[in-house]
Image (tube, rainbow, N blue to C red; front, side, top):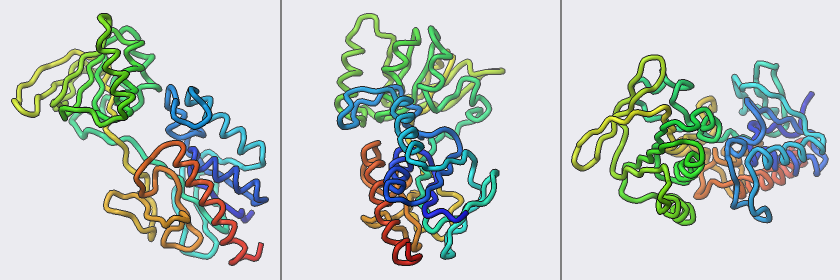
Length: 310
């Protein structure tokens, strides 16, 4: 079957594009490697989506998926092995087969950056994690450490404060770069006499040790070079994300690997669009991802009419 729109990824950008394309009467296939929702499904609480004061990420992601499904969007859950974007008809090869589309919207998202330390990969799933909301409950009443200074690390520290007996928050700079509202929430938490959070500024992790699982981390002060060893049950790494664009061939990327588009979400290849966190832009939030997906969908409609007649 030749679909009108192939959508690669299953986050807010992809699900919004699917909703808009189905409402326009287009056939839609969404290819997602894991579960619908992307990073939203891994977020404990969402408090900045307009019209919804507070909602857990899984519920919001499920609502978006249900909305797209109810309109007739089709879904395949598989990794993409290869893209063919240069021909008039676009295609993707997956473990479930090859699928073709008149247009394609790349909503590939981004993956967690690593510290690139010895033993980091060895202990993934055995104490090293890139998702506190996914794995935090495994370390209830334990001692954990978080690395990072942005929104994710601040949210993670507040979340883990309700689970762990001790939380080390480690940041290489002297100030956090997350939203002020989260910084204020952290300060309020630290002011509690019972708070389990200890902040280590101007510091970074230089070593991860253990036998079958993580047991200690070594933290170095960036200025004095003084080191200390902390006993931990888990290390959560929240230092940012990188775009998942390794498989793309011919799509113009910026120096950081993000897809370059115009305001119509068009890439340099006709019929190929990009939306969400994978795109070069100033702000990566749920609301901006949804906006990207809607814009991309509208412009695929125009492209299909011009190049395929319907």
